[in-house]
Length: 350
Ligand SMILES: Nc1nc2c(ncn2[C@@H]2O[C@H](COP(=O)(O)OP(=O)(O)OP(=O)(O)O)[C@@H](O)[C@H]2O)c(=O)[nH]1
Ligand SMILES: [Mg+2]
Image 1 (cartoon, rainbow, N blue to C red):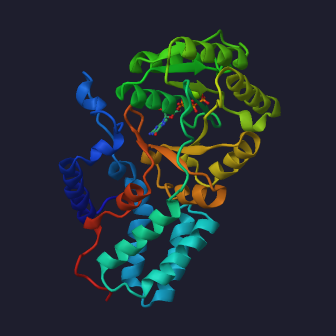
Image 2 (image 1 turned 60 degrees about the horizontal axis):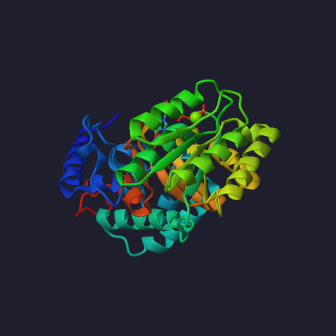
Image 3 (image 1 turned 60 degrees about the vertical axis):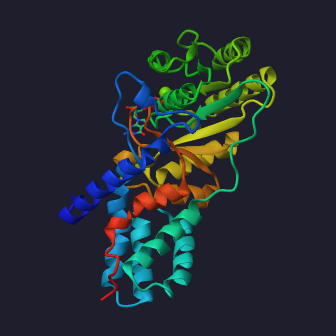
């Protein structure tokens, strides 16, 4: 699928990224890289590698339509099509196109065109609100989402980040519905050095949550992450169960859960939005983790999530490895979508 010019660009860009140490984007800010300190370093995904397929579906098509289109209006019309087919959604498409329409007047060269596209995407994804402020005791994160989206994997990755940064992490196996779920979280606990609090398969998730909170306080953990079962959005009683878990956590640790993270699988594109609405209405989600960006051309859904749900994206999953989680960064996202090497710096539209 990659043409030779793009491939060359990616190689150059990859070398530049390595040279600048931008892979550090993916490591916890307070410490060195886990891959550097761990015995068997896994290849680490980067924004650039993670967004490769979305880049093809979005930025390259925008650029070629700009190269071909005769005037601003013609480009705007084709840009709308490109955005909609790349799962950006109607609302975000309208917003982006309005931004770009304003910016187009001053654009002469491809390099200027690239800057305009990037700043539009970055501004569309920017969010004012950061994570909720810390509390005295352990910080509690509940991770929710439909089945298979990457909740448990994300929890493992979050544990890895915190532990690499010197923190103590307790994982709570409150997905007691699926037989293998407890063992899966257990493997992540072993792999990352987190503590695991678990009950038997089929146990009451709130009872596990209660024990998890008690253990976190007793062991002076600074982060507790609660794994929950998928399929909740279609089962009212299960959604009630998550609410009960949240109340249980709040009774044991002040302000808990401090963050409810909704995990969304980017490969499901626009469908993910409907799930997200259901969860948000029922639970009051604080932020989104967008997983599997590496495997999809539908990364444009990040823009739809931001525009249609108004929820900040907190993290993105860029691969299956323990280190393949990046704190969401609108600038890095937009730049990786449209690397500098993709345009001819001096070229203007023919
Ligand atoms: N490529 C890629 N795969 C991912 C990513 N995140 C998770 N996965 C894979 O997605 C699959 C499902 O992940 P889980 O973490 O088990 O998903 P879950 O939401 O906990 O699933 P349930 O517990 O069944 O609801 C696994 O094979 C993961 O390795 C990612 O960012 N990139
Ligand atoms: Mg799971």
